[in-house]
Image 1 (cartoon, protein in one colour):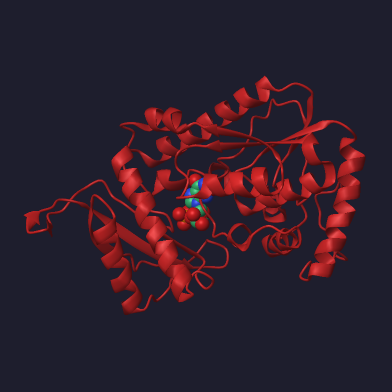
Image 2: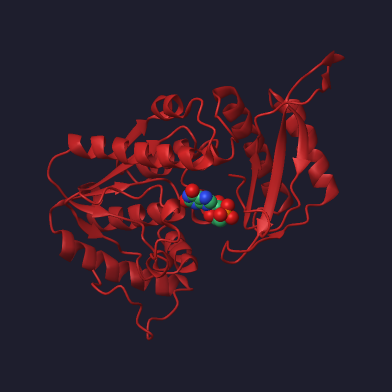
Length: 327
Ligand code: XMP
């Protein structure tokens, strides 16, 4: 493992399968040399970075890697299932799946303040992971999907973003094979490792997940509506080709209702707010123009297929002044 946290000037940008394969081979040698016959633990969220680290480590050390996937109940539709499918069924990974939905949602009940919600989710994540780690013996290493921008930005500014951040008192040596790579390189390596495009080109998703998009105090019924509406948005963006073009797109559902009508009866429901933005660094963002026919289709599907939603609204606010997320 490279000991340095500084990317050498001479390091070529990994942008071809050949360069990716060379990187993979080099890392496999270094990982084996570092780890020997010891076991390595990894928190596998299903995001790009942790998925690529997992695939790389599985290739290098197979079942010596123990992956823990904590489902905090705030994942998008089908995401935990995809982690299980790709890693347990596809790559035969040593994967521990923890459905901690009830723990998280019970703790979040009645909590409306965004930073408090984030803190609860972050702390509970560490607790669940810690408990799982405690059940295992003989683990000497902790793998992490740290990438180069994380190192460049580790000045505290984005500390609140690292929901997957793990306890500092874990006495394990770190394995961070991607720490000198930029995001685009991680994706090229992920593809070369055979991970599905859905995982490799996944749009950024905040650590606290749908928790910061189910606005105010989270309830299970509104969270369910949000998850279904978000899945429809993603499906329609996939179909019309916007998925590959837009940096981040999602639905947020606020905690108020408006009056509507369904089947000739009064139907009170929440609005689904659609947001689609483009950016390079997430510091500023512009609004993606969604064709009206696509918007009409999305509106039609969400209002007819999702229980509890009776309107669809479009957020046209760039960043600044709006942040990308609503909370
Ligand atoms: P904002 O809302 O600050 O978001 O404009 C900028 C980018 O960061 C993501 N984001 C988060 N990511 N934990 C994360 O891991 C968080 O708490 C969090 N809040 C925002 C957001 O999705 C966007 O890509």
